[in-house]
Image (cartoon, rainbow, N blue to C red):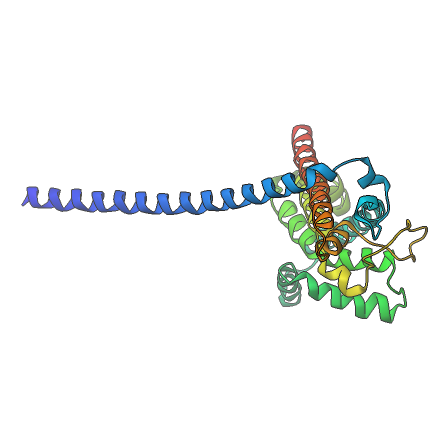
Length: 292
């Protein structure tokens, strides 16, 4: 009887190991497929665009001739938009997260708000473009300006920043708050001097990653009417503008091979900017973690 039981146990263990090996191979295959596809795409882009990655790409304005075309206005437009989005989205997003986590009563209404914020974080970006067109372009009369684009993209990243900031604040141990209150600190002193310093690394990481997503978005800006051909730099918040994804989209839409190579060069520049932002997020996180 014992031998039969041991044989059955060995068969079960053998079957589990076999299933574990099969699933491990499947997961490894799926991972390798994604890595190979992404590597092939990156290699193709670099091969096509490296020849046009020269100073003219950064100093020339868009042109109808590929040999004289650049993306100066698109790069500057993206940087202007980032400079407008960053402070607005940081203040509103982190402020909303602090209120929801530290001050708002835990009732049905706040749970409904939390559910809506989490839902908005997964809404397709084109919906925010329609919302920005209705509110900022038409209702507020900001027209198809740089300010309209920055506010529209702020709407896009706000739910992401709020959710990331809430998770960071929620991860701060309750003991820190209790120790601060025990020393006689007020609610705001506890939040500003104990909770936020502990959560700022994760908050900054979430903010930078959300902004890096916005830099690569095209659909919302096309909806609100960002121009595909701008041969000047915006001089005010109410000027027409363009950004790198729209300029790349414009070049890809053209049939000439020279413009396809220009688009590949623009993609390389955009990827470098995104990598820099992601590295900055990692460095900020590590810096603040060491200081806590």
